[in-house]
Image 1 (tube, rainbow, N blue to C red):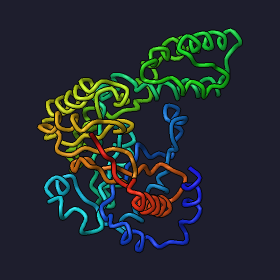
Image 2: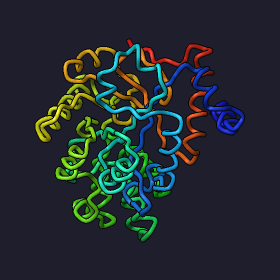
Image 3: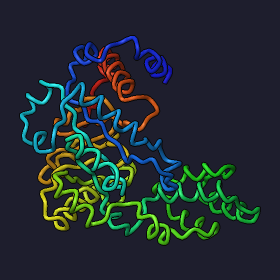
Length: 334
């Protein structure tokens, strides 16, 4: 962490061109979740929401220094040729509604292809990802406050699952395994998640996804329910992956052969990739600029940070170069 802070503060000393040449990495995989100029309660407490201005600046920087790569190009490229030219493959996770209303129009305007990775349990707002529920509850408590009796009730519910409640953000400690408690907390603070989904439509609808496909965008799978893969069995990992792919194929009548891990591919074993290989041509993690011993699994760079795209990429290249010196630049799977 200390080294990363030093690198972050020293990016201005380096030129991107020289870092690219030094690293030997010319193909990059930036990714986002959403872009918006509006207030979004269900995302506010999860990660920075970049403005359309910042997004346009990111895209302009990428276009100036790299050429965009489509899903078809990536799928059909010889692995040997992938790193010959400066290219970027753009993707978005979770299938949030801003993809249709805000992101796609900007990408169309700039002529940039993209792949949208969807969680099939949430399409048409059938359900809300538990982290979105958490953000909604935190915002409700902060904005409207709660009574002493409500606070005691929340404290009691959280204590049962081993969480001490002092501040609203303590709700972020609720994980995939204990997510059911969110419904009980919602009842305490008078939040109706179904009503919220109906009013706000956080996720893409079937009609919107079909429109995106017709506009030339690609869709991929992002699991059914967005679990931490390292916390579930390999059998469940395979099920989450293949069921989400099967659903998308049947629902939208398109080839779906790309999969992005929810959260991270940390500790996912080589055997998992072998089990999904008949259905998944390419998969994607979130470990930033890093290589992978599974040649069909690519690591993506999270772009939702306060730093500019230039600063983010310089930092990632510097970290990669340093890690390469001690042979930590590649994920080894067993």
